[in-house]
Amino acid sequence: MALNQALSGIKGAQSDLNVIANNIANANTTGFKGSRAEFADIYAYTGINLGATTVGSGTRMTDVAQQFAQGDIQTTGNSLDLAISGNGFFVVNTGNGYAYTRAGAFHQDPAGNVINQDHDALQIYPYSNTSNTFDTSTLTDLNLVTAQSTAKPSGTAVVSSNLPADATAPVLPFDTTNPATFNQSATFTVYDSLGSSHQATTYYVKTGSNQWNVNLYVDGQSAGTQALTFNATGGLATPASGVVTFNPLNYANGSNPQTLSVNFAKTTQYGTGYAAGTISQDGYTAGALSSIDIDSAGIVTANYSNGQSSKLGQLAMANFQNLQGLRQLGAASWMGSTESGTAVMGTAASGQYGTIQSGSLEESNTSDTTEQLVDMIKAQRDYQANAQVLGTDNTLTSTLFNAVSR
Image 1: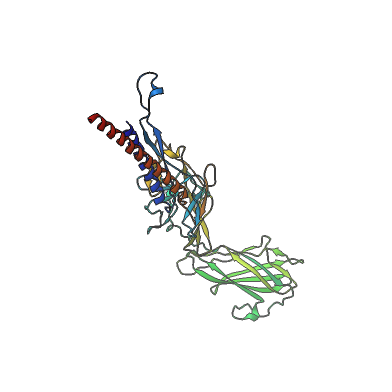
Image 2 (image 1 turned 135 degrees about the horizontal axis):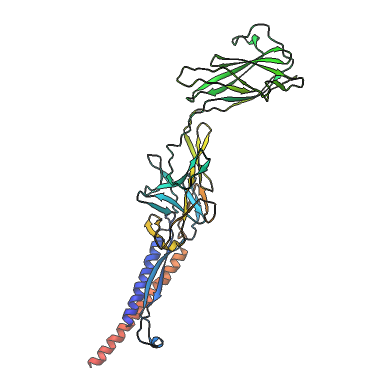
């Protein structure tokens, strides 16, 4: 009987060594979670009240339990490298369903989808521009090719400047080519519906006490003239709203006709000299994706070359009631099972879920091999001890056989 007991101990020690070896082999595997071999004694007997005199039958490995302890987080600087600090898993689409991982080394494929090393697509909750919220009822692939910023034509400009109260009204009729026919001018850029830029210039002509005309020209094309009147304290009197609308412009480049409204509410007329101030407008050209930002809540924001930004979605997160019930798929990925329970979906930095660290990766939780090496020494001693029992039992058996044969 001792032969079988020692043999079960040797097999158990060998299984323990195999688990430890796998942990050490994956010390540098991103998002890897180590395992622990668990054993139980074999204690089989029959009859009533025989337990006090029954010797156990050895040991057996009952489980290889995964250890989901947090791994160290290492900074990489790559915006698509993601780490979870706390609970939860990234959700990826394998093409045959969803898998769950903490290995956040993602990159773009030729189609612009954000994928991992197994070409599984990272899942997000899409952003709705209509409701300005994330649709948590739908999962979709994070795609960066479609993340392009369309052009927006200029519709409104805001002018903040000061016109000199002591300016003299020009004598000659207004002519853009003759500076003697206007008092001041200011130039700014506007954009049409195709995103093409055009040079707009406002020409200020004093027409009387506290009275001015504003002439707007875009690429040399007149958009008309509007009058401004100031009160005795230097503030704009008319138009009361400060907004004047100029005539539509047609650029003959295939874009829509453009009507510009200019807000002069912040324009003043004081006795000091002309101050150009600032001119802002609400249009912009089309922009290409220049960078991606992912915040601690997993909100993915695209930044464009035209200075604009937009939300693409929010990373989907998953957790399970029984992590030990997850089925390992390899590549630091798991899938749900009846033992793990259904995935509980949510978002980072809320409820039971940890936060996202962009530009970082979670290292294997066996990266510090000291503990594994200590466990290996213990398993090695277990193996040697059971081998010694096996040798001793063999010696006793041989001695018995020799005595009987005499």
